[in-house]
Image 1 (tube, rainbow, N blue to C red):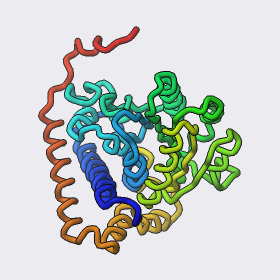
Image 2: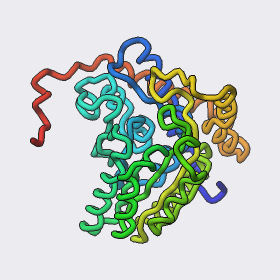
Image 3: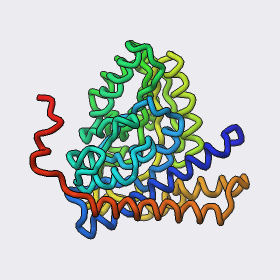
Image 4: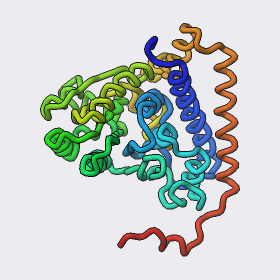
Length: 320
């Protein structure tokens, strides 16, 4: 932590706060009937998105999943357009055509998220291949859950990325559950990062609730990719505070499990680090929280006031 600039650390913490407040706001807006469809919230996993994306430039790209809000905020998608997209409004980052599971903004390096499990893994490799052809030193990063590493496309793509020495970093967010299936019921191995060994690339596991550990590990992986030294796999062990989606009551979780993980809330860990290092005071933390809360209030008001797309807009932006 001592080697990381103060501004970088505060930026990571601010990003985590913004993600948490955005998701908290979405939770209640969904209950109040403002949001169509369903939502997959990111509370508890903020350290991964914030820690990884703090290493990325605007010309780097990410691919995301059905749980994309945190990745979008961390990569720079404005909270107002993100909120409007989830509302299905025309001012949304995808003009209201994507919704919660397909948010993104190519202008900040995030193509719309892909809700199919493991669907973003080969797309990231394709963008990395394009960077290599174009002789750019940009990097592609793919976020996915541990369940995606049991999909064939995960193995096929990591093999290809390694063979072609692509500038791509694979980030596995291991939150223990693929929907309702515990990792112990789907994996014989206990360390998912070992799967990188089969493809001749570095694999590493970190505490996904420790934003500093995530940042440092991702920094090494991103710098390796940017220097032309190929891909790597980073497994971040974390925990989603809520259910898989909004209607999930988490009855499959053993008693006391959530309470134990809440003691390892990534925001609390980061706050304690900053306080202990005297990089931020209690009043400073309070002020940052209030700023994040106000931002999301304004984002929700913008989304509520925005118009729905006109019916004829359904025929725009088509490629076939």
